[in-house]
Amino acid sequence: MRKRLSIYLMCGPETPALAEAAVAGGADLLELGFPFSDPLADGPVIRRAAERALAQGMRTAACLDCLAQVRSRVEVPLVPMTYASLLEAHGWDAFARDAEARGATSLIVADLPVDERPELRRVQLVAPTSTDERLRLAAGSTDGWLYLVTLTGTTGPRADLSPALAGLVERARAVTGLPLLAGFGISTPEQARAAAGLADGIVVGSRAVEIAEEGPDALSRYVASLRQAIDA
Amino acid sequence: MSSGLYGAYGGRYVPETLIPALDELEQGWQDALADEAYAAELAHLASTYAGRPTPLTAAERFAPGKRLYLKREDLLYTGAHKLNNALGQAVLARRLGKGRIVAETGAGQHGVATATVCARFGLECVVYMGSEDMRRQRPNVERMGLLGAEVRPVEFGTKTLKEATSEAIRDWITNVETTHYLIGSCVGPHPYPQIVRELQAVIGREAREQMLELEGRLPEAVVACVGGGSNAIGIFAGFVDDPDVQLIGVEAAGAASLGSGRPGVLHGARSPVLSDEDGQIADAHSISAGLDYPGVGPEHAALRDSGRARYLGATDEEALASFRRLARTEGLLPALEPAHALARVEGLDAELILVCLSGRGDKDLAEVMSLTTGSPP
Image (cartoon, rainbow over all chains, first blue to last red; front, top):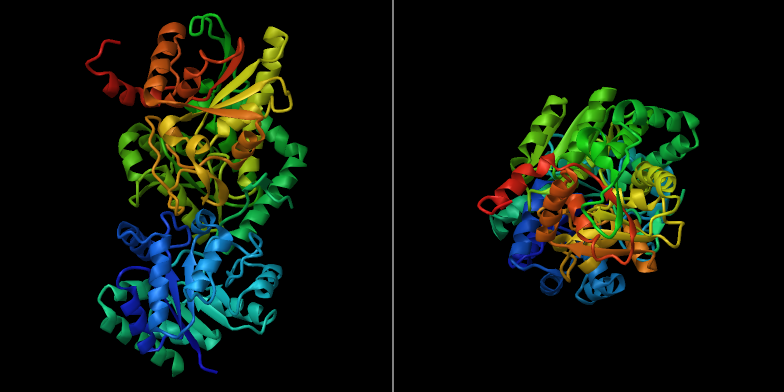
């Protein structure tokens, strides 16, 4: 089966064009960051991107507009990724409803473990520290696929693919048949290939956000290099 | 395991990576509470190292017409109530087998308390501090260094306590297997608000006994300053089951999460926060670095909603006036944080009043002097 490639982009004025470029390069799914002032799960790259986006006025309403514009340009699943504070302020149900109305396929909330707000449909994240019981819990309530956080740490490029991924994939496979996408610390084609050799797909965030600053063509070429690596 | 909810507040809004560590911490905490040896070790440290019990001092000249008592946490070693919590959590971390401690600090009081206990127990200590706070609180930075702690500057955002807390949590996410996060206030994900409250409850237990001994009755009102709220929740704990005792928290007017915040999610818990309508966290402003935080402990929010406690505000100017007045009338230099609590004493509908003097003012001298330059004392 074709390995899935998810690309994370921060919402901003350039995002619709960048989203198109990412899909042209071979992305199967896009995560759209709704910036938060205090993002606990994010490393320096996405933190700086969030600061910039907020300075550009990318509040929830503008991010929802951005989502709708991206939807009008691409066919792939779109998943807003954000933090609980934005949902608390907008209203938990209203956030999910408004995102869906603008074309979101699901949601990812980085600081909302499976036990909090179980009624909110979303893609669940699991980590190397998750117990088997929690893997089962997350797999049982996740929306379509399971997000495997490859390492204990925040988002951002690392020199090497996390050695914890193989064990996490094995434990997750034992409890679910759903697709497993590995993210955090994957930035190079070599890491992409290795991670996709273990999981059903990969998520690339920080490096994509960095390259996106160079414009749509650069992003498209970068995504294509990841696509080629995981298809090989 | 308990839910960790205080009414609609509290919970665990953290990345999944931390949940097993919070479960482990909760289990370790419950085991410690059930173990007489833990309580005995804390009691021994309190009396032989920290300087407990701290006295109650009558402040007759500060508040004529009232009977005002001060609970003297300023006399605790390191100069503030923060040591109660740091000692308790350090012993807990050792029980959990964690050899490395991370903490956040604003003014540096919690950082100094943490560095102190880490030195005492031979634990590796990393303290995150906003670079702006490091500039303002140089002596505490140097103190932490002398105690063997590594102080890491945080250059993001406001470069103050909010960012330092986020960065400490990120360190914990990264090093969760080896590290205990020694949070400084009754905030954060469950079970932290509960742990910090229990470790600070010694303030209220002692004060209640001392009050009965000195006055033969309970105070009509108990007053404490509230930033995250740990000294307040600690002294309130001694009186919360006495319905006739008014509980009054005093926030900095420019950092009044309970007074003017809205429900939000910050640093792992749902609680009132200063934020905009989209949930972006706002900057707090206070002359007192210890109250300069846009969030507050979830138990305070529940006490506010139930009406059991009331929360008032005090401005920078009111706090400064109380600071000077306590110095001139009682010979006590309070920290600027409890000076906020002192500022509300006069207007209270109560005669016998207990105020938590949570820390001493030495750390604030430069700040106070710079603000009084040119005006007669």
